[in-house]
Each structure stands twice: as C-alpha cells, then as structure tokens.
Amino acid sequence: MSRRGAGTIWLLALVLLGACSSPHPRPAASPSASAARVVYVAVGASDSVGVGSADPIRGAWTQRFYRSALPISATFVNVAVSGSTTAQALQDQVPEALKLMPTLVTVWLNVNDIIHGVTPNEYRSELQSLVGQLRGGGATTVLVANTPPLDQLPAYRACLAGAGFGGVSLCPSPVPDPAALDAVVDAYNAATASVASAAGAVLVDLHAAGLAAEKDGTEASLISPDGFHPSDAGHALVAKTFADALAASGRKE
Image (cartoon, rainbow, N blue to C red; front, top):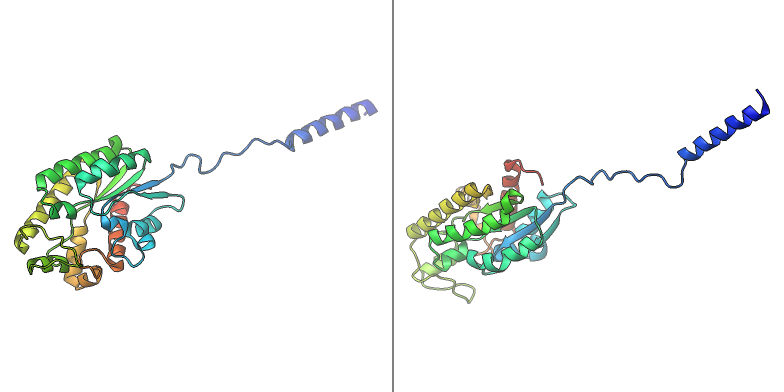
C-alpha cells in the first residue's frame, strides 16, 4: 500500500473517532419525561387541616395519605379551611384548587353541613357542583368521602345532655335524637354515593370504616380529646381508607 493510501485510511479513522467522541453529544431523553406529575390538592374542613392530631403538620390524614399513597415526586397543596361547609368550599376552595391544575383531589365535606342544618337535597346539589368542577371533564381523579357514624361521638352525646364541649357549643338546634341523626347521615351518604357515581369519582367509605371500629371496640381511640375530631389513630385510619379506595379504583397516580 502506498504511503498516500495509508495516510488516507488514518485520516478517515480519525474523522470517525472524532464523530464517536464528540464533546457535544445529543442529550438522552429523560426516562420520566413522559410520566405525568402528580399534583394532589385536599379540599375539606378541619379534619383535612389536621385538627385533632398532636402534630397537624405531619399527623393530618391528608399528610399521611400524601406520604403513604403517592409517589415521592408528587406535590401536595392543602386548601382545606376549618369550619367549611360544602357551599363555602365551593365558593372559596374550588377556585384555588383549580388554579393548581390538580391530577388528584380529595374531598371530605359533610359534618359541618349537618351541623348547619343543610338538607340532604341541598347537600347533594352543592356536592354535585363541587365534584363536577374538580373532575374537569374526567381529567382529574377525585376521591369523595362519605359521613362516618356520628351518634357515638362524645361531642354529640354532650349536645344530647344539653351541653357544649371544649368551651364552644357546636350543637345543632334542635339536637336530633340518635335515630334522627342516623337517618340524616344515611341520607347524606346516599347523596354522596350518587354524586360520586354520576361524576365518575371514587367513593371513600368512612362510614363503613367507622362501623367496623365500633364493632371491634376501637372507636374511642379514634376520637381526639375534643370529642369531635379524629385522634392521631383516627387520622391514620382515614388516610388508610382513602389510600385503599384509590388502590381499589385501579387509577394510577
């Protein structure tokens, strides 16, 4: 082979080597580039804020659900406001939630409505509007909790005895007897189930969880000293019930 031919071969080799070891390689596609980011927003009242927990910042059921049921890359914003009824949340919380473009929303609103005498039909109408807006035509997964049993709450029993609790009376007027209260809770839960089914939301059965706790004798441990809100054990059970409902729905977050 001539010296000129050998030089040509070496030149070609150097060009190819330079192409393979370019200092500006094409960036590789991120393996998570196509994965949707989970944005979780909580809509609710004092329970969702964490009242009753010894450490609401970490002990609230919403925080527990976020840490246990969602990927580590998920983000969480809590727009819940203590004392909110469904109508108030519809006006104040839903617009804030929608601005965040959530992929997942939890909703627990009912007990304050019962205390304020909202009828089951009014509650159904307001909840339907609230869940419908949050669903966004089906783009957002919405978990909606029903009403747990209320007839054994120490706060309610204090109301029956003609007293308030914690220095503040949250007793409805008039105070319903246990049978009447159970009937209202049943009507609310029928409304919640109907709204969830029609909107394609996921029903979270806190009522069944509460009945199971009554049956196994653990219900007292689930209530905080104020006689009304969940204790740390109660917040843990609520978080688990929401997580189980999400898992059973088959929806991936």
